[in-house]
Image (cartoon, rainbow, N blue to C red):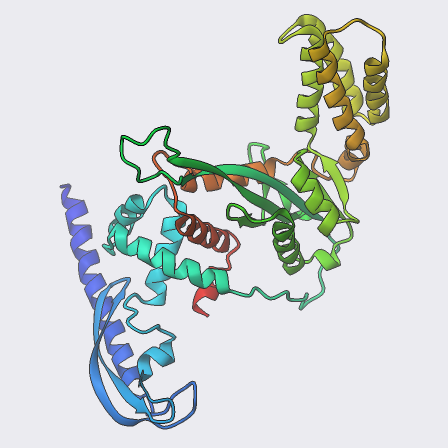
Length: 414
C-alpha cells in the first residue's frame, strides 16, 4: 500500500472513532434527559428501567442505556428513546445509515455492489442486510401519502411537460424453481413498467457541449400490472404536486401506445398532445419499406420529402398523401396493402398530434427522449445481467428509486 494512502486511512479511522464516541455521548445525554412520559399518549410510565440498546450508525455501533417503562392503560412496554427518535421496535440501523444505504442501492447495479460501495465509504453492511432494509423501507414507501402543496411565494409563469412510456423488466415466472425435468418451463416473465417524466419547460438548458439537459425533473414509475388509468392517476397526482394547476400550458409528448393515449385523454384532456416525431418517422419508414423494400433508394427518395413536410408545418398534406396512396389503383400484394392501410389508420388517428412546427415555435419538445432516458436509467438498476425479480422485490426497489429521484426520500424518516 502507498505510504500516503496508509497514513490517510489511519487518520480517517481515528476520526471515525472520535465521531462515533461523540455521537454515542450525545445520544446517551438525550436518553438521560427523557421524561418518563409517552410522547404518543402523554401518559406517565411506571417501572422505568434503563436497558442496553445498540444502534448501527454510519460511523459504527453505538452502545446506549435507554429508558424503558410500562404504559398501564395500553398494557405495553415502551422504549422512550425509540419513541422519541421514531425508531421501530428492534430497529438497529439509524435513519442516516438507512438514508445512505437507500441512496447507494438505488444508484448501483446490484445489492452486492451496494455492499462493496458501503464498505468503501466506511460502513461495512452485508448485501442481505441491505436487501432487508429495502423491503422494509419499500413497504413504508408504498404507504406514504405525498401531499399536494401550493406555491408559497410568487413564481414566474411556466409551462409543464409530461411524457409517458413503458419498458420491460424480468420477473420470475411460475416455473422459476422447477427442476430440469419440467417440460417447457416458464421460468421468466417479461413485465411492463409504466413510467413518466414531468418537468417545467423553463427548466430546459444546455451543457457546455451544447447537449440538452433538464435542470429539474420529477418521475413516476409503476410496478407491473398497474392498470393504465391507475397509473394515470399517479402521474396526474405527481404533476399536481409540481404545479400542474398553475401551468399556463401543458404539453404531452408520447409514442403511439394505445394505453398512453387512454391515460392522456382520461387525465390530461385539455393538454396539447404531440406524437413523438421519431415514432412518426418510423411509421412513415414502414410505409416506404412496404412500397419499395428495406433500404431501397426509391424508398428514401419517397420518404425524405414527406419527413420535411411533416417537420415543417405541412402535416395535413402528409396525411392526405397517405390516404390517396391507399386509395390508388396501383397493383400491390395483399401484404403491402395491409401494411399501408395499417399505417394510414395510425396517422389518421394522430392527425391532431402532428403539429411539430407549431410545437417548435412554442419551444416545446418534439420527442419523448426524457422519458426514454428515464427508462434506461431504471433499467441499469432493474434489468441488469442475471436479474430476475419477485414482484415485492421489484416493487419495493422501484418505489425507493422514484422517491430518491424526486428527492422525496427524506419523507421516509419524517
